Image (tube, rainbow, N blue to C red; front, top):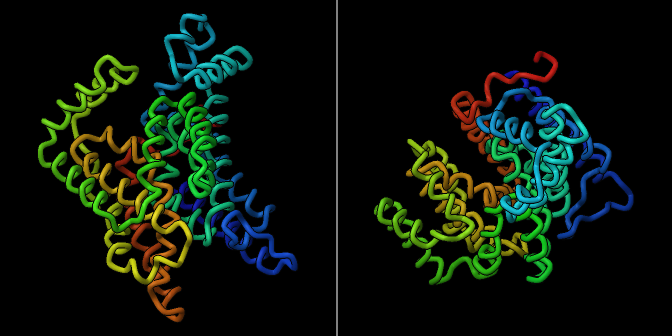
Amino acid sequence: MGVYLFNLAMVVTWSSLAVTLSKKSINKPLNYLGYVKPNSVFSFFVFATLFLVSALRWRVGTDYWTYERIFTFAEHYTITDFLERSPEYLTTLINWGIAVNFNDPQVTFAFYAFLTCFLINKAFENYSDNYVLSVILYILTLNYGSSFNGVSQWAAAAILFIGYKFILEKNFLKYLIVVLIATAIHSSALIAILFYFFVARPFKSKLNLIILGFFILASLFFNQFLTGLFFVIEGTAYGNYSGWFSAQDKGAHFLRFVVAVTPVILGAIFYGKIKHSRVDIDILLNFSLLNAMLMLLATKDFIFARFTIFTDLYVIFLIPQLLKIFKRKDYLIVAYLILLCYFAFMYLLLPVDSNLLPYRTIFIR
């Protein structure tokens, strides 16, 4: 736990300096949405801190051994192996290239850690109006720890995250290219095509009520829902995912659903006060709603939590907007209370979540 707490402390320090020094800059560079962009030097330190803790881990994370085995066989891939791994050609190529040139599977983890941490931190720079709060929440919501698992899926999510600008610009063609690149890293990223059409709508709409009702019914009649889902994906490239569901013996912790749905409930209640806080507030609320509904299904079968990898990051942009409900004099107090709640969430789940403890480094192997 000490390494994660030290990592959190360093990220708080570097991100605070990044914002403080940027605001004192004469030119005050702005990010994509017109907010003050953090100082690039200290923002790099934030990235470096996140990257090093992730890259230097050894046998940390439930999926560590899976990726270690993949690396062992990657050196012997043939053309047939590449074709059989459709559509994840980039992941196959990356694993093969590292296996051929390096005799250490740790390089694979370092590569994905670099890609994921760099792109996510860059997205925070480009799209966040509260850089400090964003990077802190990235850790406290356990998204950072989650990236130690589902390694290639998190890399795909990071690619989609940096491509958020194309949703804002309503440029479907460019967004589709980003999705296809992400799909070449992890096939589940193809679902992000549906996200484009779902999120670019008013939050308060009849369609959202219909979708909300669908997910609630799917949760109540979960076995019947799975039967229908298996029928839909049978015979497709995603047919093998049916085995993932039957392999799971429990759902996600209910506290994860509570944490996911709370920002959506608050956003719905105080929509009138936050609807002008950002130009993309409806998009963020729609992403957050979808994230909460997927987490609801995840309480039945943990595999659905894997799909929240593609939606959870956008909630980090929504939370600072909820703070704007309060008067300026109360802003900091409420912000600290929220961070305290998320810290308690991390502290409670980290010891029992995804084999993240104890943290070990490559220097002790």
